[in-house]
Image (cartoon, rainbow, N blue to C red; front, side, top):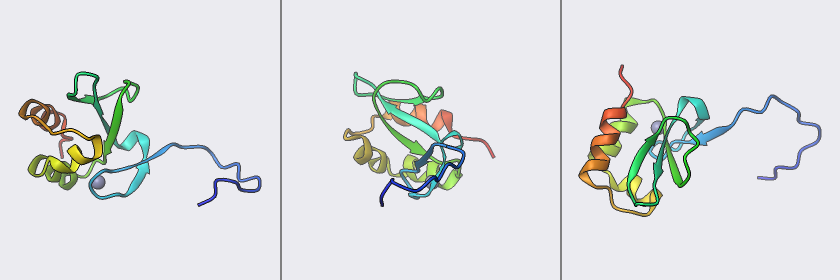
Length: 96
Ligand SMILES: [Zn+2]
């Protein structure tokens, strides 16, 4: 797991891991959920909000997993998910 490599100058594309399926994808294909200073979960469409973040990939199954079991996200962000948080997540779920 060393980051030191010899002249590995590939195009740098940031990758992030989905909090549910643990698969790594390009950051832009994931949705960032951020824990605000108020302890709420908001969907961070810009990816630039301050706060601890967790990522969800675009697979509907991962969103459903979080909606059915918000603890997955709660553990990642160290808080308990309120019903308002859950509604915000549900509203941001990608349509297929
Ligand atoms: Zn996923």
